[in-house]
Amino acid sequence: MLKKFLFILFVVALISGAGYYIWQDLNIFEKKSGSGENIPAENNNITDLSCSIDGGSDAESDCLKKEDEANIEISDLDNAGVDYSFVKLDNENFIIDIPLPNLDRAVVFGDDFSEEQKTKLMSQIDSAVEALKKDNYYFNGWINLGLFRKAVGDYEGTKEAWEYASAIMPQDALSFSNLGVLYGYYLKDNKKAEENYLKAIENEPLNGYYYNQLYEFYRDVLEDKTKIRQILEKAVKNKTGDYQDFQKILDDL
Image 1 (cartoon, rainbow, N blue to C red):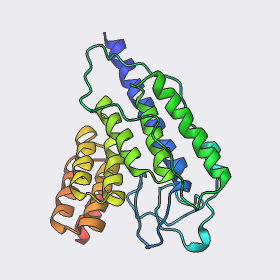
Image 2 (tube, one colour; image 1 turned 135 degrees about the vertical axis):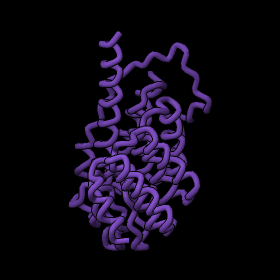
Image 3 (cartoon, rainbow, N blue to C red; image 1 turned 90 degrees about the vertical axis):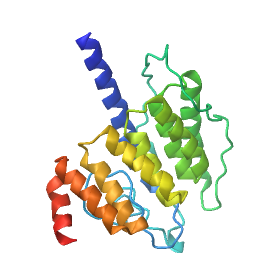
């Protein structure tokens, strides 16, 4: 029984980690609007993220591209590292209370995508869809599909994929963290953004990264000093990773 439990923990950690690194590799495809707005993403550093279009930052930095940066580099897509090996979960008595997303959802590209980019992204989306049609419970497949649809600019399709991933694994933090970014910086739904960030923290209360995400959201979007202080104090109290950095921010408030 113990061995089986440990194996399940290993599987959950493996697929969550894979989704995290795929997110990082896809930031080269983020669409930019030119407003100068900084949009954070998956990154374990507590410091501010640098603006980089060509991969100089490990974070998904939506420092929005200038008009002369309209041609997105495609070379890093080959390194996305998508692994479509299947991880089977015991779903015999598992109930998902939201409908299965339409896996045949149309993909619409903007004018700023080259034919090469369209072909590459369609190949990635098709591979993710094929995997999910074989196994609707493939958590990492839903994470991947959301990432690829987000790269195209299909935020509604991204939301559907990550909401379904959250329903499959409600105790995982990754999908809720991703939804927090999506709702907060793309769909502009602050209430749902906060709910998802808080759920990620609830699921991984010792992971400092998720506290940092919410701190940045409170600072940059809500501009709510009371909530900033509360989330920083909670991070310090729980002695999360890098909690000393949170304490320094508190001291400077």
